[in-house]
Amino acid sequence: MSTLPSPNGQPLVDFAVLRELEQQVDDPSIVVDFVHDFVDLWKSRYERLAQALEPLDPDTALDALISIRTAAAMAGAVRLAGDARELGEAVKRGDEAEAVGLLPGLEVCGRQTLLELQEHYPKPKKEQV
View 1 (cartoon, rainbow, N blue to C red):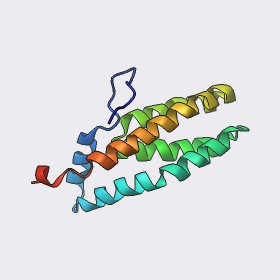
View 2: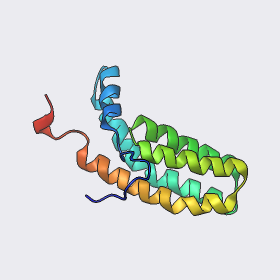
View 3: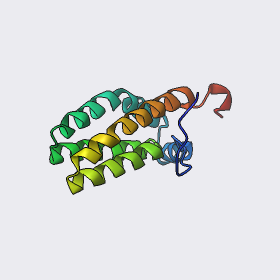
View 4: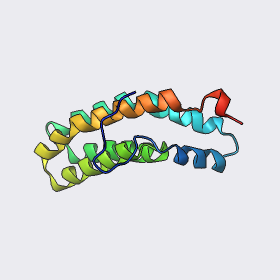
């Protein structure tokens, strides 16, 4: 899979975050289910955000961004969480033009993140021990 290069060198997904989360719960399948839910909910989270940006509804946009950023961070999607944080800063400043301008990059990052998670998590059976 080809991904856009990150300007700050961050990976799309830090799988160490998921491994750590697996160790913190009694049943690692909970983390697998969480990742699948993260993937399944992306479209609705993104659409809610997009609708809140034109015209700018800061409360709804920030709520959608908090949902995206928190879930992304838990799923190890560090680049997506960072992009959501950056877009949130534009919303907080009331800069609708910048927020709308950042939205396509967030969408691309989100789609690439989902592909990365779907292709590489959970780990292939030969790697599970």
